[in-house]
Image (tube, rainbow, N blue to C red; front, side, top):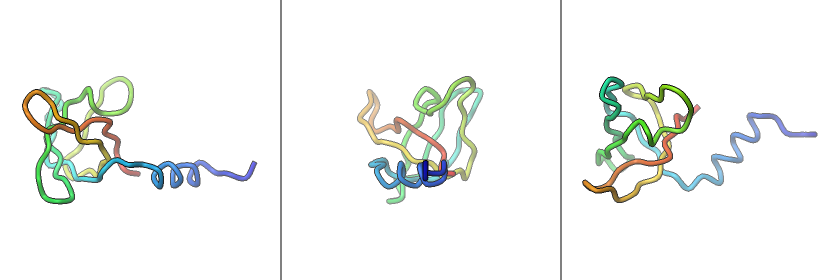
Length: 84
């Protein structure tokens, strides 16, 4: 087998159609926050939209990848994951 986990990660990112952004702020007690998109607009993010198990949270300034969907109150981030 000739693939490392790093190569697999790079391949996943190459096929990833999500966009990139930076966490503007995230309140873990309330479970939501905002991500600044590469174009400069802010987009809402809820803890349920973060990939992972258990307590899901984001840190201010953290780079993330996400999909944009239309929610009840406008655009929001889905399928959010930190960039390694």
